[in-house]
Length: 155
Image (cartoon, rainbow, N blue to C red; front, side, top):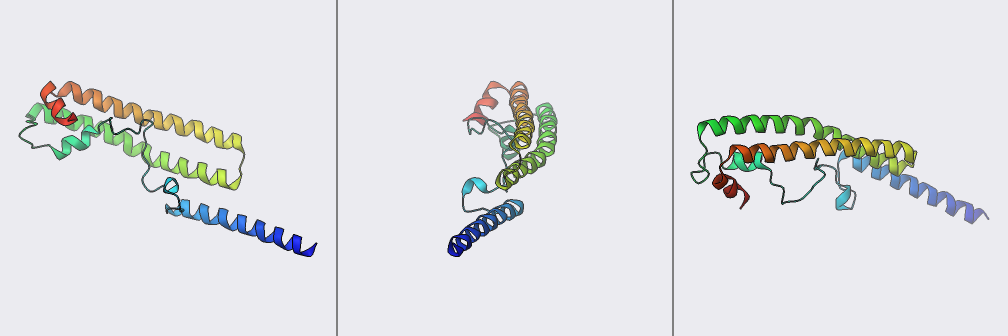
């Protein structure tokens, strides 16, 4: 009987220490043996497809490219799109990251699933907002560029 009690206590201690280790790893942003646990680089979008281009990055990389051939007024408008987009994403990303980490920690700690589900609803709203921003960026950029310029960036 004493052996059974000792084994049970050791099992509980191991489970608790694993939970604490996982929580500390998540809080530190380290990889907890599984790639999906790494929270260092959070993607704030709902649609995580490489088919949805990140135009602000592409345009920045090709700003003076002769093939893209951006003119002065386009550059001015594109800078405004970039400013709007980056301001929104920079505001949303840390909030999304923090909420994702909290959901993981609450889940591993065994907190109330109703509390976790409320947090999940908030996370979905934030990611939807980030995705709307991304779609608006694509839409606005497409309206500024000529068809030839747009095709150059989407090749």
